[in-house]
Image (cartoon, rainbow, N blue to C red; front, top):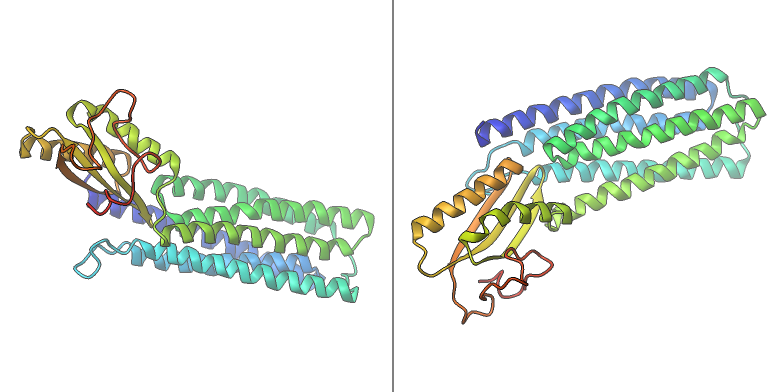
Length: 326
């Protein structure tokens, strides 16, 4: 499968995942909002608003996936991958705003002493069923997020995963309130929903920040990358200047490949293509740039390789100031 075909297939998979997320969010939100409004249950209204926001966020994510899927052009040679990070950022701020608003209303109810008249048992059963439903959908979304490497789908999966704990906790809490005749439990649960929203907003926005600031790939991925390069070690002196970042589903990888001075241009070029193919086999949406250098020990960033030194210098053991400018 070509790089272009894989990109198209990846885009279709992500779009389908977002459609599933939208359908799940809207269907559950309608039930929660109706029950919350009719029964004056603040916790259900809070979770209904949260769930409805998920549907709106999913639509935003779907739009950003369409935008990010556009091929690179002259004005945007690195493509549009960061649209997905922007979409995840919008989702994170929606969740943050909802968390603050729900917390504010719940605290106001606590201060005023306002509570619902009663908590029906069938509401508890509905919440438990919703938790199971969310569990199934979140498993599907997380699998797609790992398969595609999409930060937007990851944000969707993490967001839905919180619903498992929130709706399950609501069901258990409302059951306790119903059996013990403690209607104030409803307001306390609304505060719990707000706390969960603030936590997930922090997690999503942190990932978005990392992508927008071009933070290196996670340490485990850099280790996997180093492992992919090691089998070629007998054909080069060392690799340094290894730089990585992520934009949406695309990983950008740059490196300096140091070879012996007598290595021909064709041999070095062929080696760089083999390295690129090995990386693309692991991350099909990656963009790899290999800068070839002949060994010159008079340069501070070059050295003769010895057994006690790694052939592939990663961010942890590679000088950063001069070699990245070289």
